[in-house]
Image (cartoon, rainbow, N blue to C red; front, side, top):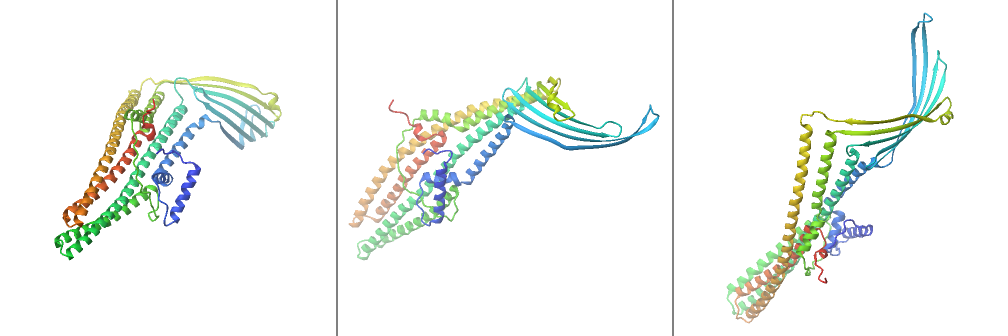
Length: 492
């Protein structure tokens, strides 16, 4: 009963071809329970939407991880043109002078940066400037400038916002994957329920058909006996009513089958007009479930418990983020710049030298906030305490669910043997009453009672086996484990 979280390409192609054949063939091959589960994983609309949610969270994680990858940006100004005309007084010449100048400036810069977890952000930037000035009062000149700057930045008192965001994104992605795994199990349980509903309806139709055939045979026999005067007319009429009731039950069972078929089509993501047949074989196999092992495995594999733990981590990060935003902070910034300059482009590497070294610590400290910080921090602390309480409550709830599932599986399994014995007794009783009625020493009412008992016993036996399969499916959901993992090793 193991269900792979992600279908392989081969499995997907096989399921796709099976889907096409189902749509094209009017008499498709009956689908087993595993076929239905695999088909639902490919075509169920809700499950496809849940997969899109995981992809959306994955994209958010990629966006949060981007500062920790190599980033490159380029800025260019091609060109910047300034033209200036002005008249001003020259004190020495005691005259007014008019100045005209034009300035062409080409500028470009490339920045490479990458943040390393727990170390800070490293950056390298390189730029160049070409300046050309033409003036009627000064000598025209052409100037080239090139520089390279190395920078480093790090939060000293708290974790950087980028690192907090990437941790939150990683936890959110893990949470969405865990939720998808659990929703996949819910889909499996839904498919299992719809599948067995249809199987039970089809098998019940067979039982109703057997009852109808028995009622028709009994009525024919009673009619013959009445014609030769062996029984009263009232007994013939009684068996006629029983036959009509059997026909009505048979017709009702056919209607239920179509409803169940549409229900399964919807779960599988199939069109309502596509023919659908299922394998109606219902088998019983004893699986000795160990309750203590089931609880241990369930607590280890339940993703909703993992989800509660992730919420705790998210609340801790929220508390840390609030403390960082409202509390004191210190950021270290260090930089070193190399620069070259000249009238020609080849002059830049010849006089390339260190032009600037800088280091500073930016310290921010709130002095008076009127209780805003204390209130925000306390709210985050309470949220963290609540998530811790939720984890313990979730653990207790999971243990209770697993214990109930194990008990339900054991109780439904015991019902199988009881219903089998009851069916054998009912069938034997019907054989006796049918033989007595054919010999003319039995009563029609006793025969009808025996027929009803057989039908009820057959339905009850079938239902007990199906209920056991449903209980095993529910146990798989409550433990999120394969049933083979819940069986104790008896060899040790």
